[in-house]
Length: 79
Image (cartoon, rainbow, N blue to C red; front, side, top):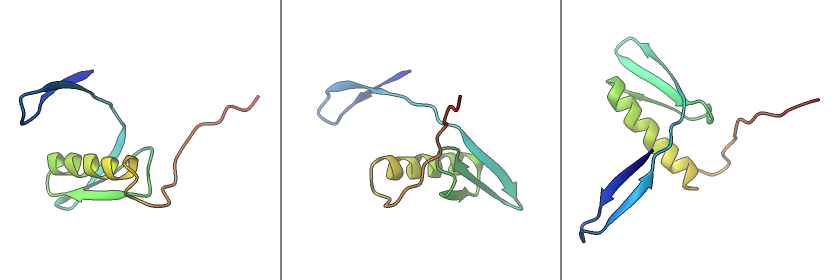
């Protein structure tokens, strides 16, 4: 899926959207969650929408190299 984005200068470009899975739950009045690929990095929000925004921020930080020593989850095929 592509999203069209317009910059301040009026130039348009397309940003490829990516879907990632996340795990979430409600604990009293807070929503908690983490991105499935990076279970070590949890976040929270007062609403589900705020949690989703915080998860996007964490994903950007991790994949942008701003978080050192990131552990990854991967699959391995064994014959």
